[in-house]
Length: 237
Image (cartoon, rainbow, N blue to C red; front, top):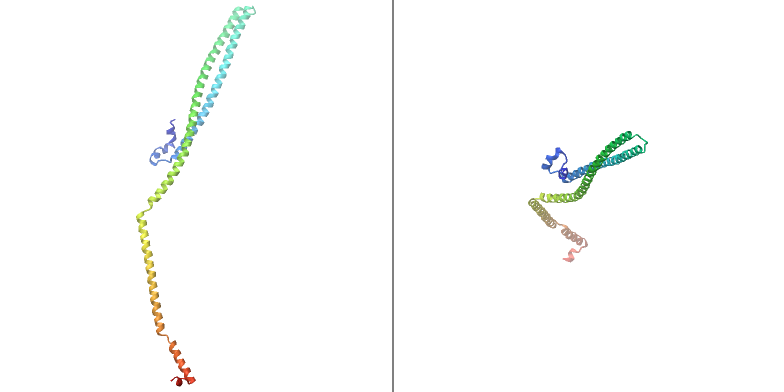
């Protein structure tokens, strides 16, 4: 199966939406790796099965080869017995002929098993090559996934920062600062006005207090009375 088609396959129901919604590349890559690992598992299972068939075919080839040799040896032994007079020549020829027929059948099984072994070995070589390619692809894509995760992390951080910067309205910020400065200036002026009013009120109170102060006049009156008691008013005069 085409590795790129597997990589970008999440499910048939999501295939069309992936184009419009731009599916998360990390999830898609992870899914592709999972698909490749499933392919690897299936290939390993197939390899084991084909190797088992190859071993069985090889064993059958050896078994039939042994039978062919055995029938050949039996035919020779029967002919030798006939030559020595231990068997009738016609009977020996008949049995030797049957042995040679069995030998030929065994040889045909040997040829067939040998051809099967050859085909199985070719399939084994192809499967092993496919397995190596899948393993290499898995390793490459796992490394790509690490790089992709790092790139996405940096990309998201940069995107969030740029988004925050884009959402900052410089004109509204300046306007807000100007209003704050105006508010502060107004508060400062108001405080100064209250200070002037407080000082003005204090000055008036001091003048009124001074004007209404009778302590000095009372002291003069008390002094005059004291002098009068002492009879000093006339002397001073």
